[in-house]
Image (cartoon, rainbow, N blue to C red; front, side, top):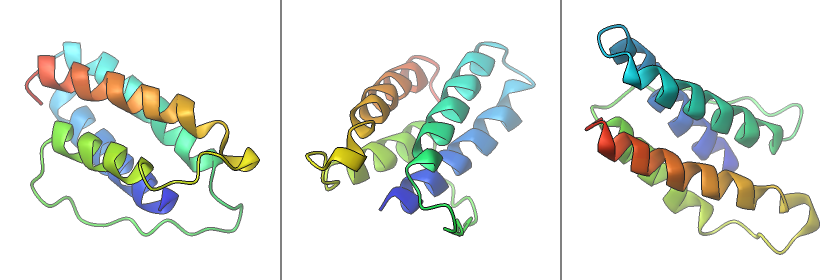
Length: 103
């Protein structure tokens, strides 16, 4: 499940940085997505290979909502998942920012 979140964040980052060249407010969003991507990546086992899919036409906001939706099934009560709540908060903030930027 974390692997899917990392993949969605990767896609959102790629799309945001592609669009940031023409709209500088998106640079802040891109940095936030990259930070969330790094947070999620740290929750993966060291030897985990992230399957990077093809961007399928979803907007950045949709990709972020899909990533946040996947966090709802994570076992947040387990000690090794304690930092996941920070990721959930970051995703919610990014969803709001992407909505303001019409991404």
